[in-house]
Image 1 (cartoon, one colour):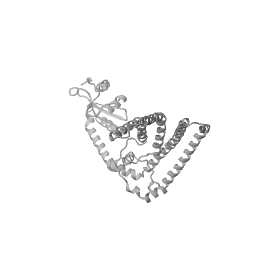
Image 2 (tube, one colour; image 1 turned 180 degrees about the horizontal axis):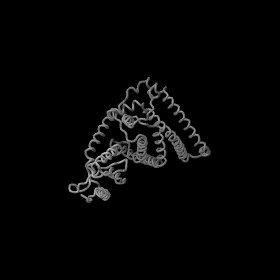
Image 3 (cartoon, rainbow, N blue to C red; image 1 turned 135 degrees about the vertical axis):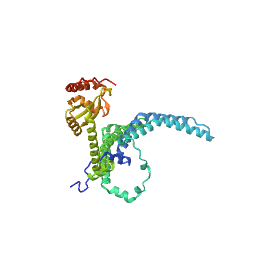
Image 4 (cartoon, rainbow, N blue to C red; image 1 turned 90 degrees about the vertical axis):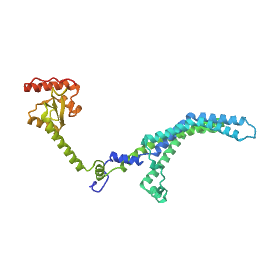
Length: 360
């Protein structure tokens, strides 16, 4: 009944997923990228922050201690500006570069390498106030609002917990001098931000899992959609079935011409059948002239019985020849000995002198 009502109960096909990806429809959590950047940013400030402060302080001390003449021309201003840019670039480049790298990695981690030029084109419809209001008042908007309020509560609890655990230090800070108070406040702020980032990153992982589930649900298909897609990609199933039937009949007809020329049929014993022909005067090595599995193998054995061709059971040899040799090609080197043994057995049954296959 669910299928008849058009309910989407089928898992999305790979083609459906690829189409959605090409259109930029992927599971992505902005919170995961933001939380990752917050954690990386705090760690970078802990690592490179003192160096940046020392560099900036040293530059300010130098500038204030070397007061030049007041008649400064444009060349002096340009020189000083270049010095400031070089100083700031040298100090901030590791932080900015690693932050950018972390942002790229967080996005690649979620969606891989993906470039959708259509997403860069502004969408005028998104500027419609009514559409925006509908998104806010929708179920998805309500869930986002609820999750946002939950995140605010978690951040508040984590920050309050960090401050509570360092309560004695905070109370003692009022007696510190300015030179000691500044490092303590910076350390306290970074520690709080780091624990808040860890909490947000944990929530973001849950959000990412939800986004993947929701993305999969949005791509779910009805049975009719699956059938229609199969028709578009592969053609009508009835036409495919008729084509395969024709191909199978053509293969059976070819076997009807080739199998009677075989010297022996090697079987598995019922699953596989390989027809081998060897003419010492014309062939350097035995040749596989037909092979088949299932119905085709039964057809080969039936033709062998009709034309009095010996059928020999050799499971390893049959599997090897079926897998490695196409019809019309000689047997591989490693099977010469086994094929020679089978041919010797067949010629012995016929009362003839067995030929000895040699490598080409």
